Length: 151
Image (cartoon, rainbow, N blue to C red; front, side):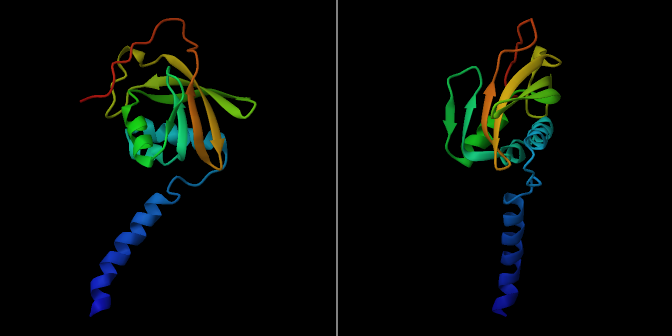
């Protein structure tokens, strides 16, 4: 009888652990990791996008570098990015992969007039996870106006 009461708990725990430990496909290919992160962000899934980051992680979005020390901080960072992005090109620069994205609107975000513009980020991927995400100078000539997340 006690086993019958524990069985649902075991199933819930198994499902939770499966969702947390590698639901990202566990790819070690840095470009694949960045593409999967980008797809999750475009879909408006900041929680899934955060699974592609190490804890801690460094981010720099036109700011000094910020160390995100918890999974919650990484989820918050991903949820507050106003735009999604489709990969246009990638190039290797030392340990970093520079990626040019075409900005897209996304569920939960508000890319505003930024939609369709190009931006560039440098990623450091370590052990199949994004350890650093740094915004680089925009390849577009005109200013991008991003209005922020939808309330």
